[in-house]
Length: 191
Image 1 (cartoon, helix red, strand yellow):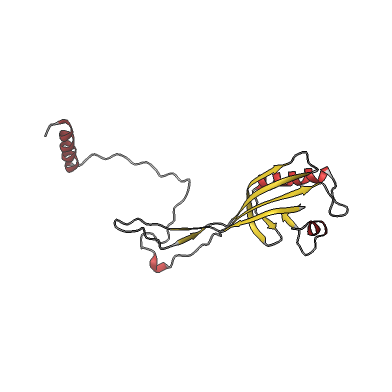
Image 2 (cartoon, helix red, strand yellow):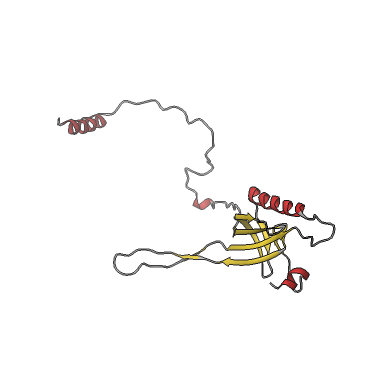
């Protein structure tokens, strides 16, 4: 990114992390990873027959400065304080955000880490963030076709937090008693 495009935004879109505008995007790195399954076999090489696609990752680093880039907005140190607090809120709320860079727009991203640092060189701080795309699922319900339900289960459903009742002990029948004697005898050396 040239100094001219940084100052005058010629041909570039503003980079943002959620609602936080970055004054300069220094580095952007997208990670697209997959994992091949591996099944061991007795002879030969492992068998791989499937690939699991992992979530897309994004690493970025940039600067937030005290310089005012929009009219009637927060100026100076208050801009830095507001931006740092916004990063804390993104981390605390754990909500998906949209990250926009000059090359891409990343939706449904969650912050995995964020390092904010500054030194005595000026009124700015550097930020390094790691994001991961999340995939949401929705609950789907399906009716079981009547022809698939067994006769005993038809029309019945379990209930939660219901008492199961008590079971009264019954006396062992003669076969159970002889089996018990045989087992106990084997344990103690008596037959």
